[in-house]
Image (cartoon, rainbow over all chains, first blue to last red; front, side, top):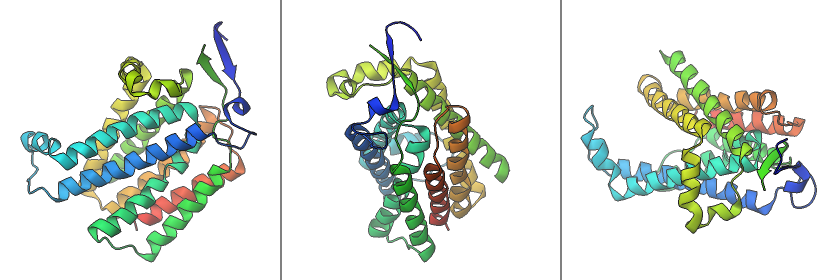
Length: 151
Length: 121
């Protein structure tokens, strides 16, 4: 271990007990999910309400990027990328992947409410599987690896 | 072509996530660095970290391969088949990143992967 650094054990990163996920990790997880869902929704909304034919020419794509909804979507998805990177530093990859999958459920609900998409019984079953999976993973410790932090 | 694209998507997604998880744990971003005044500095720092730049490159490959897959296959095929990466990444998180994955977490990851697959049916 390099001098000037400390090794932070799993228990020290959590607020109380090995299986508790601290508040900052919970808040950042919510932010990651929120920016993903709203970013995809804004992109989808913007693309559905533009009468632009997309071909091989890059110009229509560039014009599309600067329309309000697509610009909002792109900004939110950049924030999603950065916040997810930060979250991957705070929690296990095997924790982040399942827990942030709740975004699939919210996207399906937004699709039904705003775009009138059909939600079949298979989709509802899929939602139940995802929620159960997230509850299972949420009961485990968010970070099980040793970390080095600059002092 | 279809399965070739699936292999590229899953492979590049897995590499991107492993690289991000590895690098972000080497130098953890502190809560204070997320304040608006420090955000620009944090972004500059991230852009100078080779593994993260490589991870973004793999994400771009995954994105364009997914677009290509959608042009040759249905969404109801594309989403479930790429959800398999959740399970593969959990296996690699155990083997490469040395994460401790309990039976409960395994059950959760499998359940989520099944759920994502069902959502696209």
